[in-house]
Amino acid sequence: MSAQNLDTLVQTNGTPNTIEATVEAARQLFNTGVTKPLDWRLARLTAMNQMLVDHKDDFTAALAADLGKHPTEAWLSEIGFLTAEIAHTVKHLQDWLKPRKASVPLKFQPAAATIVLEPLGVVLVIAPWNYPIQLLLAPIIGALAAGNTVVAKPSEMAPASSAVLARWVPEYLAGAVTIVEGGVPETTSLLDQRFDHIFFTGNGRVGRIVMSAAAKHLTPVTLELGGKSPVYIDDTVEMITAARRIVWGKFMNAGQTCVAPDYVLGTDSALAKLAKELPEAIEELYGAEPAHSLAFGRMINDAAFSRVAGLLAMDLQEESGSALVTGGSTDAATRYIAPTVVHVDAESALMDDEIFGPVLALVTVESAQAAIEFINHREKPLALYVFSEDAGVREAFTVQTSSGALNFGVPAAHLGIPGLPFGGVGESGMGRYHGQHSIDTFSHHKAVLDKPLSPDTMSLIYPPFGAIKKQV
Ligand code: NAD
Image (cartoon, rainbow, N blue to C red):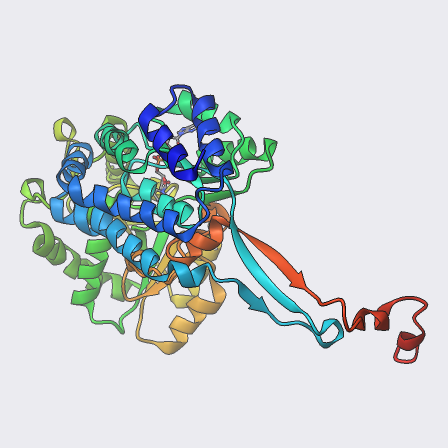
């Protein structure tokens, strides 16, 4: 059977109805070798792009239903983000797949050493709910571009997005990508299967479950996790723009962004200046009544609302020592939490776990060095944002801290630079993707050495080592 026929056959038969059969079908397609040629990969990327263009309205509506996402934000952070990632990959894929030369030491010359990228096989992608379309499809772009087949599980917490993916992906990417909808039971049985790579985005607790399941089959994992991403700000910066950018990064998607600024460290004087500008920046972006702004999202579900609203209420109790800078109102019926800024101390409940909602904490420190120590006493964050014009301060943060990413002057924007790897370190994750980094993640880097039999320069190192003895 030709590769083309097999592809069609999978499409005609639709998705197999058991998880075992689903994974087996993905493996069978991979084993035919159909996924290896560049043309197959480019065709799949083009098909995904077409799906996003043809059904943009469905994806936009699903994101509005799940998260109250504004259509423009849905485009910027999900649909358009994906079409840009596809365009970048399509443009460069042929170059990225070329064998990479390695230098050959004199003692092994003449010889050619190259690194050849080969697909891994069947990739499992497990996505969270906060960017439910982007975080499912972005790793799939890399997995397909690297010549793999994919089984993908959207988050059950974003049911409209999950449904729209299950509706359209099979039509455009049949066989190459199979969507398995569901929650913990489905993910658990997926994790029983053998994959060649597992790409998980979510929290560290589930990340540990994924990694131990993967260990059974010695399957490599990429874990894109979360954590508290800090900001450091000092007096040297232009505060109005800094405040606006912090507000943008923090309150998009109602603070439910893995790289959102979680808390801001600064001296009393820097934080006082920032605190003055933050309410104005919030008003500029979301109006005087953010509850009425179409640009401001909602908490994903009641449990997420109660968790963040509860933390906020606990923090604002009289004896806590925290001071509300702006916001603070909540509405359980609409799962609305106003864009909120609170000045807290380091022991506040808001400083325990990732806030993952529209509440920004300000924490006073004595100096840049104290901020560095504060950060280094905690788990390594997914991102760290420094607002300072002081070259010494920038250098100190670069050299003395560790984080998935370090941005100066802007939060979150590194995701949109396809040349930059995206991923965490330590508790914020392992592995990286986007652009060429995705190709590297979803490929095996095979070492290929080609040494002509003649002349036999290897004879220089054969026993009985007469020639070498003279040199050592
Ligand atoms: P989650 O870990 O609860 O869920 C992610 C996926 O795991 C879902 O598909 C879910 O069905 C599945 N899952 C949940 N419990 C499971 C279990 N017991 N066994 C097997 N599978 C299970 O993550 P979430 O709450 O949806 O996402 C929020 C977290 O993800 C935050 O910590 C956030 O920072 C992080 N995050 C990280 C990134 C990143 O790119 N690094 C992006 C978005 C979110």
